[in-house]
Image (tube, rainbow, N blue to C red; front, side, top):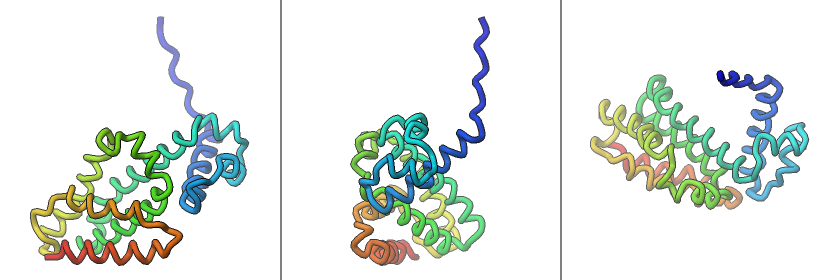
Length: 185
C-alpha cells in the first residue's frame, strides 16, 4: 500500500505561522510573560490558530530559539564574505546580543528543553559559526590565532543574563567591546 504524499502547507497557514513567530519574538523580548492570547491577537489570528502551530508556550519559545540560532549560524559566513573580519565579528556579536535580549526571560525553558545545552542540536554548528569568524580574523591578522570558539561562546553566554530593562543594550555593547578587545591580535 502506497503512502499518500504529504499535503503541502497552505500559503495562508505559512503566513500565519510566520506572523505568529514575528509577533512572539517582539512580545517575548519585551516581556517574558507575554500571553499567548495577546500574541495571537497582535498577529491577527485566533488563539486556536496559534495552538495549531504551537501547542504549548514552550513549543513556541523553542521554535523562536531554533529560528534565531539558525539565523545566527547562517549569518556568520555571509558577514565574513561581505565585511572585513573584525567588522564581521562585531556585526555578528551585535546580532547575538539582540538574540540575548529575547533569551533573557525564557532561558530556563530553553535550557530545560536542551538539557542545559548538552543536547542542543545547534551547539556544534554555533561553535562552527564562531570559528568561521575567528579563522577569518586570524588569517588577516586582526584577531589572535588559535582561539577556541567554545571559549568565546562562554564569554558570550553572559548576554543571556543581561536584563534588557536595566540598560541592557548599552551593557551588552560594553561587554562585547571587551570581548572583541580581548580577541584582537
